[in-house]
Amino acid sequence: MIGPLLVDIARDFQVSVGTAGLLAAVSAAPQALMSPFAGMVSDRFGRRPTLVLSLAGVAVTLVGAALAPTFALLALARFLAGCVGAFGPTSLMASIGDLFAPARRAQAMGWFNMGFSIAALAGVPAASAVAGLFGWRAAFAVIGAALAVLAIAMRLWYPSVAGASGSSSVAATYHAVRGVPRLGHVLGANFVERSMFGMMMFYVPAFLMLAYGKNAIQVAPFLALVAVGAIAGNVVGGSLGDRLPRAAVFVMAQLAAAAVGFALFGLGVGFAAAVALAALFGLANSTGRPPFLALASELAPDHRGAMFGLIALTNQAAIVVGSALGALVIDAGGYTWFAGLAVLQGLAAGALALPLAAARELPPEIRMSQSKVSQALGAIAATWKLRGLDGLTSLLGRKLYWRYTYVRFAVDLGEWQIEPRGGPVTARKATLDELARIRAARSGLPVQFYADETHGVRHCYLGFVDDQVASVSWVFTHENIVRHMTLEPGEIMLDGAFTLPEFRGRGLLSVVERAILDDARRDGVRFAYTHVAVDNRASLRAVWKTGFRPIGLLHWRWILGVSRTDYLGGAESAATAAGVSFGNAVARA
Image (tube, rainbow, N blue to C red; front, side, top):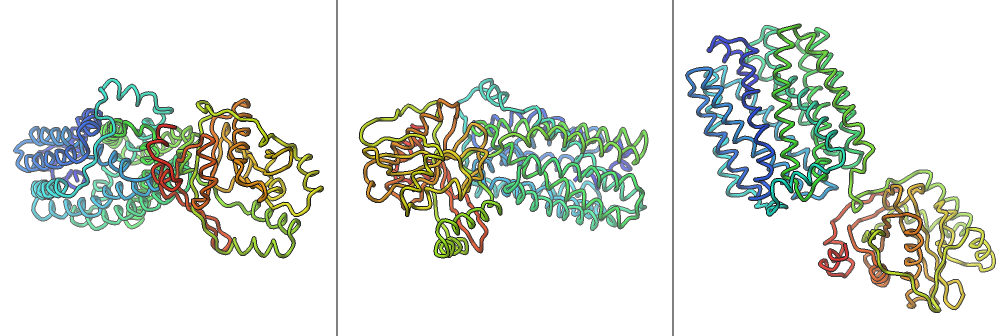
């Protein structure tokens, strides 16, 4: 809210606009320093108490700012606001990580981050209008009263969410957070991006007023358009962040924001074009924010408040640096230099986030595959070859509309203890040549025996009863197109299992899977996955018996040839669907 008030505050206290702009730094510096502590408090005492403390405390300091007789006392009020304000954003971001499933967390972060944009849409123009009509002091007082009401509402209705690490010491908590892979890239990218955002948005109102001869009331409606752009960016970013690699969305958004920032401040466009570019900057920059926050929420789930404390630390430190750099650059070279600095910041934020794009961003329970045209065409061609018109009609019928709910199971082969067993029921890996001879000698085998032709998979296991072929199962790797999830090196998926009817009820599935897992462990595979339909009770029991644990519940459907997989729930929901105790599933994990 400070941006629209800068000119009037500078005039009243007879300081420069650049000096008045340091009020943002005075508030952001203590907020940055307090944020890690705020994250610990949130983890230890819960989210709601820290939110209420933050809102009520800032409300009191805003009233104090409205009454400040000197610039020094106004700066002191802003300093105190930063101290208590540190508890709010940290607790809110951690709450989203607590309350929303990972597969929907980017959208939730988009709605959260939209609050800042709505504040810009309603709060900043309102503050500008109030300041224009009644003076900047009235603007502080009105916002303070609104925050006091919001603190009461939070106390009454906000969900009571306890932190995840209430008994951890400060040292143990931050030692755990410090071990997060690529933490430096996360914090560095966040710092540079927030510095660019703070610098740009902080000086946009003053730029529009001074460069185009407008006053606060004249600028207020156009600032609302800038906020609309940021709101749209959060909606777009939330949607993209749950569908595309989150770090990649962030990188592209910051590169686009840098280009728009250069055009806004460096090309000398007219007033209407400047407003449009400012709105476009808000759109581009905000598109990257929800995916980035969702990614951060998954880095240290047991210490989420502490993690977001570090994020908030870099947020506020970036505001300090951004506002100070903006004032320095404007005084030294005007808005042309300002435009160049925006470009450098956008490029730096994107470069720092690039290594994150190559990292695994989603836990395995919510990694989804995308339907592939090549896979669909291959399946159609193979089905025609193997089953003719009847088989093709059946396949296309399922592609038009078909749905099923599956449990996703996983096993960590580094900890797997169940060994294969012998007896009349045995299993071993078969070559594709051997499988081809079996198919040639026995007509009428089900389509599961032809997965090498329908899905391109190369690793086949056969189950035997008294040396007779009784079942087949296939092993998919990261090199295959997998219908249910994306695989990474060191991971496999067991799929396409089928037991011939005359051999069912003898535990073949479990025996075959044990043989697969034993071979995979010797080959250096670390994680194995499989999927079982919720109504296939026999397979659910067999998979559990093999040593898998349920980790996710998925809904898979085909509608008019388009495949979609939705995440329905985590380990608890999956255990319930699989018919096993959640406590036993956790113990096995």
